[in-house]
Length: 60
Image (cartoon, rainbow, N blue to C red; front, side, top):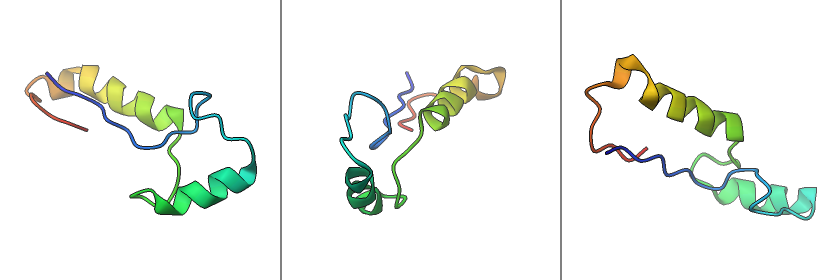
């Protein structure tokens, strides 16, 4: 089993009220910014593709 464990992603579930919220929370993330939904989708697409058939037990 593989698992995608993203950090803070700019989606409605996080309900950022203002740009100031994003500016405050972005720098404290491991990559220094808030993630984008398409970045998560790309990782899921990669894991589901034929190139990762031997990827097992990965936490991404």
